Amino acid sequence: MDLTGKRFLIDPGHGGDFPEKTYKNRMEKEITLKLSKILRDMLKDEGAARVFLTRSHDKDFDGKDADDDINKRVDYINKFPGVDVLLSIHVNTETGRAGMFYPVNGKASKTLARSLQRKYATYIAHAGVWEGDFAIN
Ligand SMILES: [Zn+2]
Image (tube, rainbow, N blue to C red; front, top):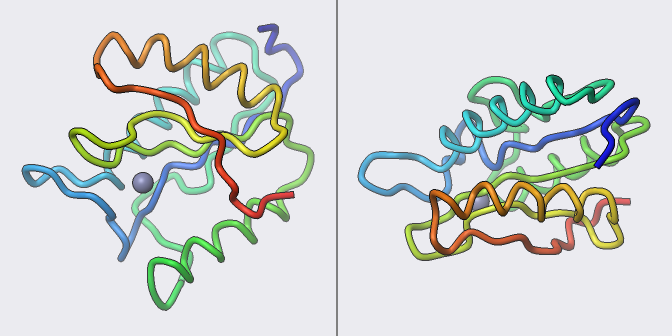
């Protein structure tokens, strides 16, 4: 996949008051942020024009609860200009879905997600990719 000139938006799942899954004191929000920063650096090294993160530190989107926070996150993503590829990073639980979610009809996002999943699978047996309905347009 030629990344030259492409603009990426990486969404580290959860954050702030909404850590989501916790396993042995490790919180999903921390792992997704670390993974997203590694991914950002990898994409830049491969020639991506710009790589943005929906959050670069431990923060939420001022939602009144987890669902409201996700809706506010989706609003933020929908207002983000000119993105070619969107990936939302989640690790969920030990046996749950770990990997990348990409938007419905996001062909380039799906291609990248599948490519990354092959790397992910080296470390996580149940790694995968999923099409997600994020109400993102
Ligand atoms: Zn998650």
